[in-house]
Amino acid sequence: MAKIQAIRGMNDILPEQTPVWQYVESTVRQVLGQYGYQEIRMPVVEQTELFKRSIGEVTDIVEKEMYTFDDRNGDSLTLRPEGTAGCVRAAEEHGLLFNQTRRLWYTGPMFRHERPQKGRYRQFHQIGVECFGMDGPDIDAELLILTARLWQALGLAGHTRLEINSIGTSEARKVYRQALVDYLDQYRDQLDDDSKRRLTTNPLRILDSKDAGTRKILEGAPSLDDYLDDESRAHFEQLKGLLDAAGVKYSVNPALVRGLDYYGKTVFEWITDSLGAQGTVCAGGRYDGLVEQLGGKPTKAVGFAMGLERLILLLETLELVPDYVNNHADVYVTAMGDKVIAPAMAIAEELRSALPGRVVVTHCGGGSFKSQMKKADRSGARYAVILGENELASGNVGLKPLRDDEPQQDIARSELAQALANRLAQ
Image 1 (cartoon, helix red, strand yellow):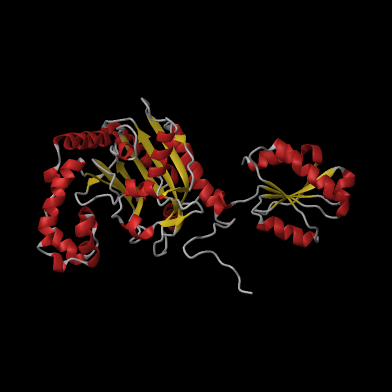
Image 2 (cartoon, rainbow, N blue to C red; image 1 turned 90 degrees about the vertical axis):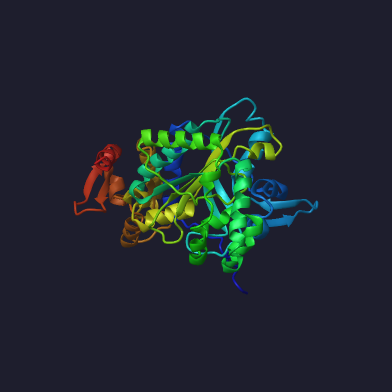
């Protein structure tokens, strides 16, 4: 019988990998907590209409990438391809936005039927941050400042760069969109296939084309900056001033647009040059019209999302994962013989009570002294506690360092916890 394997592009995260995920997630949780952001958890399945109305029916995501199906009641449901729409739906449904400001964040799996490649999967994980009810550029700046702090905490400050742009209001973009289409229509036959298709669906995305021929044509295209409304221009200038004051370095990229319909005014991307083509590690912007678009009252909003797979790949590529992250145990308690199994488990419980935050692994399954010590070494523990019948009779235990050449010591069981606390603190 053939073995059942995981669906292509949907990967298992194995026990050897999860410590790095936990390290990144806990670092993000800590930084966001410092700024007063609250976690929200939404379902992974939503009504398909939610994404059609928010992302846009003529985007690649809705047209080609969503996992959509009819349930037994005939309702069209979709595995969430991104988190913003679901967060807006949840906040509006539960009355979180009425005359309030909100700083929210979430994490979890997203789903898109894309071609799997390194750093890009069909089930992938994102951390998203969404802010509601704040109009000024100060909240835009806060998001970028806190992200800069996160890169600092992860050791990535010298490996990421920030690009920002303003894409104006929807009214200003309509005028610019027509000017861009009129210009590009003259070169339709010379555009790459994706750009030809986008010319009638989402022409602003052509500005982000990587095709060399299209990039050459775009050199003479009208600039979005020339079509910005006064309000968006003032907002953007204030944002740049706040970033300058905070010491957050950035560059203005006039070609930067976001691929989802709901963005307006500020857009931004944090980019790395250490992962080849998969360079964006965090992206977002303002979406002041989305809450109203989904049936709520007009609400100012801004947010971003970062892909965990890509962020972890970057940390591993640059060898920035701290050594302690992959150390699974601090102490390994052995049991040499059936008579000492219960006392060994009791010692392990005493150590867990006395050493909160330390990982104490009890050997289970029997085996020789040699095999137990091999497993102790593989656990990554710094010390092995050795308990046999002789130690049990004497009231002592053996304490063996596993990461240096110090000799094994016999220590009274009553003194073991304090001895380990002193050694592990060094």
